[in-house]
Image (cartoon, rainbow, N blue to C red; front, side, top):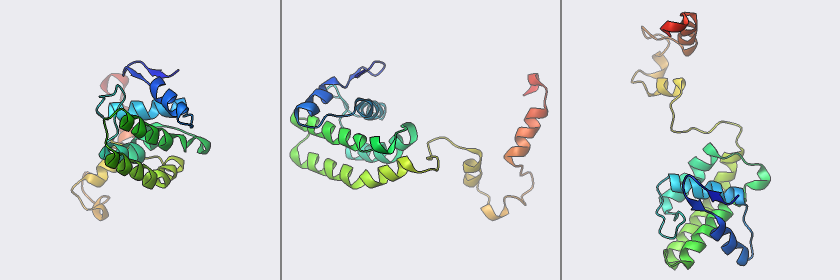
Length: 169
């Protein structure tokens, strides 16, 4: 399947373009990269999302590790799709050669960090806020959290909620 229906993205032109240039792309990686770029607000003058420097970094260091699960053998496919998309956009006349070279250099520079982030056993930090994350953001110093009046642990809060009858939760 090479079409992402809700976003009206068709990965087939990019896959065909890359196939004619010598390197077939992974369709799953292409759909992930195109979909995440589109959801990030990338311009779509060619019908496909156009990578911008700030979007390349956000995609590679935050969005891909957060939303995409991949085997180590599949990891090289994601930067390859991004480089092919940059070339496709350049050939369509939407990106000049200097910008294309800077974007490709940024992708190549971030490639080791992406592989490390996507294979890390720790869960990536997303835009959401966990209980411990919110506690760290509190104005109270972290060394005094336990001794502060009114401080309750998340386990205590969950236990209190679990003890209430169903209607009053």
